[in-house]
Image (tube, rainbow, N blue to C red; front, side, top):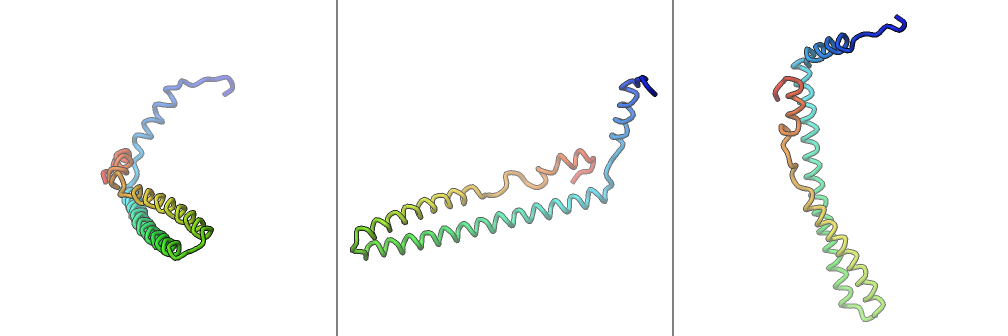
Amino acid sequence: MYRKSIKRDAIEAPFEEMLRAMQPSRNLVDITTSMLKHAWGMRLDQQVDQKAYIARQLKATQKQIDGLVDKMIDSQSATVTKAIESRVEKLETDKLLLAEKQSQSSKPKCSFEEIFELSMVISGKPL
């Protein structure tokens, strides 16, 4: 229909009604919730693993520092002592960065239910 116009309300009102009537099935909501909970659990496990990895790195870095300090004490050469001091300074910096990472990797700020509550309210199905 060339050069014919249709009122906006004639198109948008039925479309809005159709959108309001659309609701996901309970089965779809259950499957989606299960998948999201599984992904949430995997993410929590990753955080625990990451924290343990950082703790191991901190322990290894401290062990390296202790070993270098022992070598520095035993060393008679000023050049070797300076090289060891610079290496210890770098390891101390690495250790501080690891400690910062470890303090930042904590529990999530919100629970699973709090985060995904809005999506379930929109779907019309409570968690």
